[in-house]
Image 1 (cartoon, rainbow, N blue to C red):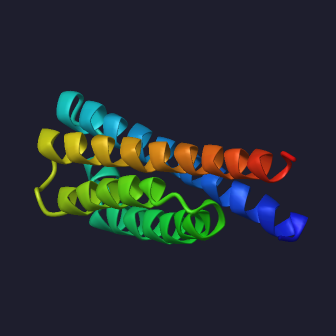
Image 2: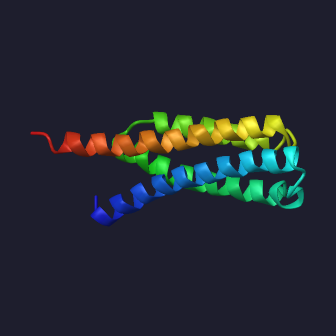
Amino acid sequence: MPPSFKSIRGRLDRAGIFLSGLCAVHCVLGVVLVGVLGLGGGVLLDPAIHEVGLALAVVFGAVSLGFGVRHHGRVAPLVIGGLGLSLMATALFVGHGLPEAVLTILGVALVASAHIVNLRGHRAHASDQHRP
């Protein structure tokens, strides 16, 4: 596999981890600022933010975790990521508040974990190929 492709694949996983973290921060800030302080409801609770975030998560997850299955043959990251994306999608339908925050944070934690497991799978696969 060309080195540039390996670099892109790793960057996609890292971007997925970063975006998961941003999503969790957005969710916590939304609960605190809107629920506790009554600030920013129009912006932080805008459905478009959640829909775009989920779309980005699906794209990064499908591409990087799908490449992972093809490269190292481990399906676990794809399954973990899929479960996380399912929780995130479910959060879009429960309405704003604590249930949405819990589902989203659990979902992004699973998606980030899937990307971490995927990165480790790539490293393990690479080290296995270099052994005599």
